[in-house]
Amino acid sequence: MNVPALPTSPPITLDVAIVGAGPAGAAAALALGGRGLRIGIIEKSRLPRYKTCGGGVLRRAIQLLPVDVRSAIERECNRADLVHHEPSLRFSCVRDQPIVSMVMRDRFDHLLTCAAEATGAQVFAGCAVQDVRVDAEYVTLVAEEQVFTARFVIAADGVGSVVARRTNRAPLREVVPALECEVTLPEGEMAPFLESARFDFGAVPAGYGWVFPKQGHLSIGVGTTRKGAASLPAEYRRYLDLLGIGEPLREERHGYMIPCRPRDGLFDLSRVLFVGDAAGLADPVTAEGITGGILSGQLAARAILAGGLQPAAVNAAYRSTLEEALLADLRVARWLAWVLYDCPRLRVRLLRRYGPSMSELMTRIVTGETTYRAIVRRPGNYLKLLRRAA
Ligand SMILES: Cc1cc2nc3c(=O)[nH]c(=O)nc-3n(C[C@H](O)[C@H](O)[C@H](O)COP(=O)(O)OP(=O)(O)OC[C@H]3O[C@@H](n4cnc5c(N)ncnc54)[C@H](O)[C@@H]3O)c2cc1C
Image (tube, rainbow, N blue to C red; front, side, top):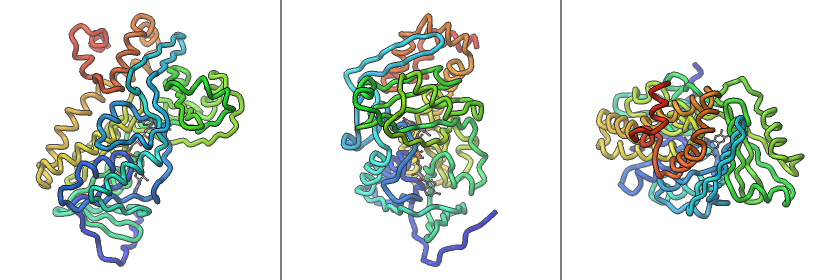
């Protein structure tokens, strides 16, 4: 293993070092702020930084945030169009409040990080963590030009988590590829896509395509649960054809990975709490990870406070609250994703019979009106019956 040379400046001592200034890291810092603790956010990029993402922030995520993020929202969609291919069906769900708020992640994440900084967190940007050592009393983080020691580390460093790798955690499983393109079209061609968040299930093998309207451009993307089986650039081209889009005026493509299964051994390491993508907490149905990032960041922070900075108590608090608030729900979502993406015949039967109510239920989940778990708990719910049969 290539161990980087230690920087010469004296270590910075923190109570909690948060690695990564995405939504998970910023949410953790916000929840820890204003309590007299020394909090540091260590981020490898200069801020604001670009992040490959559709930038669709679901209502359930917005509701979790303690800060007003309206200045970072480019467009709000009160309508979601769920378009299914094979069988060909289309359902529109409308709400008084936005179902999805569209952001560019550089501005959104930066707003959250600045809000955390205002509560007293120190931000070390342009500072990539390269090595991690966990001792009984503290954790040492070695960055390019700086060493940090901290009583706790919140690993919010995304799907490729260096903290996980340098502490020998097992690799994440069920990491799915997605391709996101920022597309500008002539004004007239853009107009039909500006009012709603559009999802096309089955437009991509075992996955979906999306169109999210932003300010002056569209985010169009494709994702699949089949690792390596699909050529996403080719699927993306087919998806543009399906949408009736010819040659965009401008197009910028970015591909990346989304982790849709919680990390094995998530709670095995004392003093290190994994959150967001680093913990594998994206929703397996929607591949949406901002909600899980914010929620887990907040729960990790609250566990550190509730556990009085005692490792065993902190670990137990994080384990029980994450299980109750998120992991149990993700287990139901994983089962639903399996039906949706891996059981084409069952999916067709379900959609033909229950399409409108399934679309409404999905909308209720993403707006935070209910959860996957609450739905299958309801006596007599058809999904519950199916789950027993599966
Ligand atoms: C194509 C695509 C489209 C998506 N669309 C959506 C969507 O529309 N809605 C949605 O909710 N989710 C979407 N997601 C998922 C979403 O982007 C992630 O789930 C979310 O960003 C996770 O947040 P996070 O804070 O855990 O990690 P990240 O946002 O990835 O933040 C991690 C941070 O850690 C930093 N970092 C990494 N390594 C180091 C290091 N060694 N030292 C210091 N800092 C480090 C990174 O620079 C980064 O700033 C999409 C993902 C992809 C790939």
